[in-house]
Image (cartoon, rainbow, N blue to C red; front, top):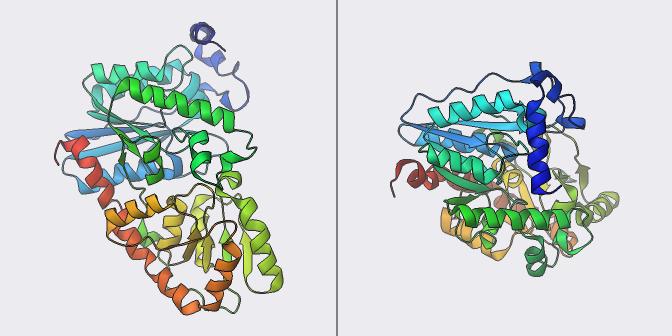
Length: 394
């Protein structure tokens, strides 16, 4: 659909009564008036931060909490649209995706609240912070915040800015080097995001260090987890057959096709107990990790994120492929070597055999994980990164 047709369709949709608008939308985008949530409430603090609209891996919620807990006079509210297959991460406010996309009533109220009640905003993944009407651009919504006097930053999470063609050229095991069906769409999305960032010229944050290749002007905002909530007292590598867990959010991106044959072969041999985890809500992953010795993270992207941090915080031995540049960035930020055992699809079998053969060394590496996560990913470092944007201090 061309921009002109989208604009026209959006204008026509606005003419429909609210009760009918949700009924003409396809599939998961339909909604009822009763689905419209109440307005959000701005904090009462001098600095009031609004973060929207995706909350991938619960990070908008965690960054907001980190800022509020560690920076004086800062309060934060995150808002995220929720789809039927959402992992239900914690969020200050949620809205059904259909309401976010098409409810004029909800969109007007949200815009009024944000423009009148907040001082700062972080726009995630270059998506519409006030909902996604067909007749309005993300650029236009950001400009409305700037005109109202808000300080605005953009935040890239991953596929919204990672350029598949560049990633494939730099990473031999890149998921985009093969026939991944979504690659053309992801390429287009990343290029559109890049153009929007260039056009806006605003501060940019990225959630993982590998994204600095695609957004070199950005600042790394480390992901945040509740370290104590993930802590497990039991040491790893005590069982005769170590339990190896792989729980990818997206198997094609994480490299499950590289992991499964190797791990299953070692399972059948009796060397390990392999547990492939799918469809488990995030709240139940703590129990999954409590019963594991080794967590197989990802083997195609070359970075680490929330799942790896949760595994390290639980004292599990995390194995995955992390590019040298990311390891350097983590060392510079934390002063601690990243305690993720490196393996590629080609080396995974040898790495796992080596881990089982030298259990004491594996347990020692796993024992350093919680301290690394506490230093870099418990929220304090992320609050420091946000400090200049929110408080104007260095």
